[in-house]
Image 1 (cartoon, rainbow, N blue to C red):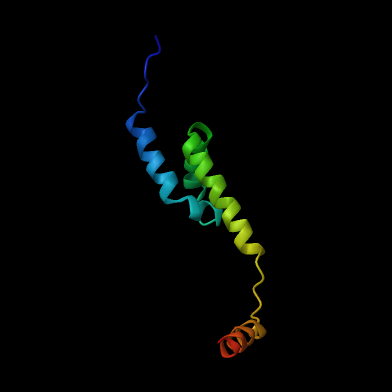
Image 2 (cartoon, rainbow, N blue to C red):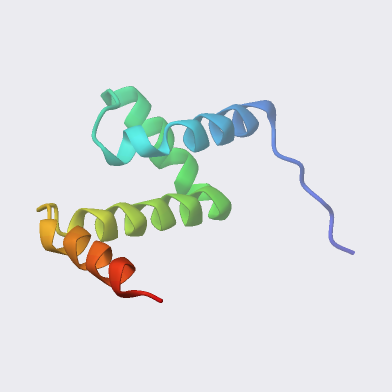
Length: 85
């Protein structure tokens, strides 16, 4: 029979910390000790590792979007609205 193992208080604190600071971690805004804390926790917590990777993919996709403003899009929408019955 398998025995259930419940995480200790440190795991729970690090779990909350990793979740709350994932964005700061990816943006390089954490100090060395905080970075190690997130890295240590995500190395043993599949849920936080998955969340961090999902956030990393999202940020990469967002950074890949064009940042230039396209005035022709607004003009095209307005033109289509004016021609609509």
